[in-house]
Image 1 (cartoon, rainbow, N blue to C red):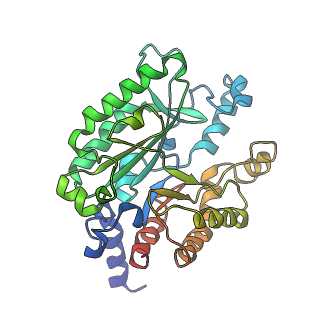
Image 2 (cartoon, rainbow, N blue to C red; image 1 turned 30 degrees about the horizontal axis):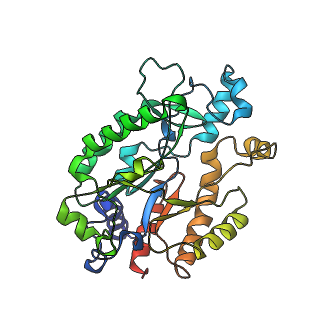
Image 3 (tube, helix red, strand yellow; image 1 turned 120 degrees about the vertical axis):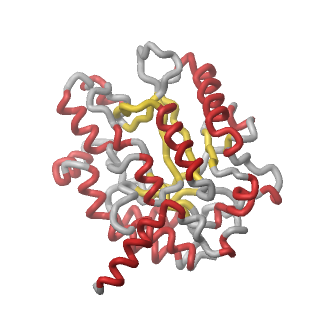
Length: 320
């Protein structure tokens, strides 16, 4: 590759901290769910705590006292290696945030993220970091998908009330309200005009009664490790996707929930190694798929790897 070409590509890659701002004008006035948006799957898993008890699956909880089991859990639960700000700077705009409460935590309102294990960093600390980034990049629209809410138990209402109040106070006027009428459909231009750039999808029915909390965003999983089957399942799901709301095409791999998982654990040792092997194939598939059917959010493991974000963002040049 010529030196000039390499330098040009590097500048382009570094520019993804503000890629929405640089989209062509015709993309500024279409519905946000008609854009192709990079996202990360299980976004906080780079922060999984080796000292955390096992939160799921239930069959492994009894092994929480074994560090070797927790180590395997972390290796296979860690879908991201870059931290949340690095993911934002790399161009990711959708974040899959699964929330849980730590049992016997002395702070009744403190929450964490989880994927098998809990994270080291609590929810409020991470959301503050995202808010600071959103203030520094006012033309970039961020979509936060909060879900699962594991271990809320009898304190469910109190915990949801605390978290939703915190979110409203933190992001304030930056929150994009969910549309009530078709003419309220959000576009980049509308968000810019209103100085709003944070969308919060909150998977809890009581929260959805509030105008600033959007309904659950459908996430289509390939649900497996076999790339051919993953692609086939995603293709079928995308054909049925609504074009009137956000939806996610997940390029992530999923271990079987039975003894069949062991062959992958012994072969790859970590999820990251399996993902690196699969990403080039899935990346080629998503480019082919974009020519056949519309795409919206495309979320992935290891979202900052290689030129994945570049590939996804560039699909806006060929999408409707």
